Structure formats: C-alpha cells, structure tokens
Image (tube, rainbow, N blue to C red; front, side, top):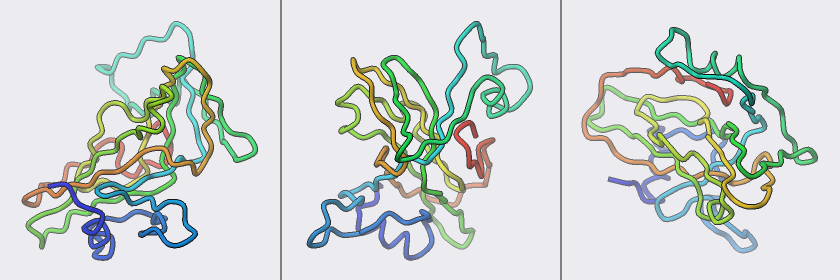
Length: 194
C-alpha cells in the first residue's frame, strides 16, 4: 500500500519515516508557491556533490572483490556545486549525485509492519530528457543515509544542476511483517558513490 501525504505526515510524526531536514511546508499556504508533498509522494532535493565517472578504457567487473563505492571512487572525480557554481549536465553525460536529505526507514521489532520506499525521477525533469535515478528505485526497510541519484542527460541541450533544486520524489510503501535486517553495502552512505 502506498502512503498518501496524510499518512506520510503520520509516519514522520511517529518516527516510522525520518527525513532530515524535513521538506517544508507540509501543506501549501497563502504565499507559498509549492508544497514538496504531493498526494502520495514527497520531493527530495539535490545535495552539493556530483561524482563524474572517468572517460576512457575502463571496464567494470563486479564479480571481482571490493566494494562498488571504492571502484567508483577510483575511477571518478567528485566536485562540490554551489548556487554560484552549478553543474552543467551536457547531453549524453552521466553523473552521480545524492539527495540533500538523509532518509531512514527504521525497522521496529515491536511493529507488525514497516516502511519501504521508491525513489523516482520527476516528470518535469524527464520532459527535458533528464533521467534521474532511472534504475533500482527500491529503498529497503532499515535503510539509513542519503540516496544516490544516477543522472543522465538524454536531451538535446545542456541542463543545469543546482544544489537544493527539487530533483526526485520519494514514494513510501507499507511492508507487511517485520523483515530480518540485511543492511546493504550502501547503508549509511553520505557520498554519491556510496
């Protein structure tokens, strides 16, 4: 079951869903142009780091030992972006970013349900040819950290990425039963590679 915005507010208030900083305002008010909470999703914003994979004769082999994050770090450059120095995502360019928000989906053993989520791109970005987090959208119960965003420009023109811009949406679902925790390699991540 996907949570509505009303249920998202309850989950945040109860600590079943943690988003820091919490997107504001919860509800549109007079003078506010936009609430990040849609009918069943919440917008997340872009953090201030972009990881740019190196170009060239690199072949990734994920069957070899080592962490994915280490492999990415060895073959990429991470830069900081600011409002004054945004990143220009050129056509056919792929980069990694991260959400500004820290997201946590705690598993509480005393409950018979918990939450999972999906991070999805936004239609308003896709209409310019920008794919945001286009594969593996699942955020598993028990996850805690910022969310890495795979971003590619398939459009005909450059696209400016600025920190704090709305970049993706989180759709939260209820999971029946309490799963046994199985933290991923990316648990606690705070950088785009993991």
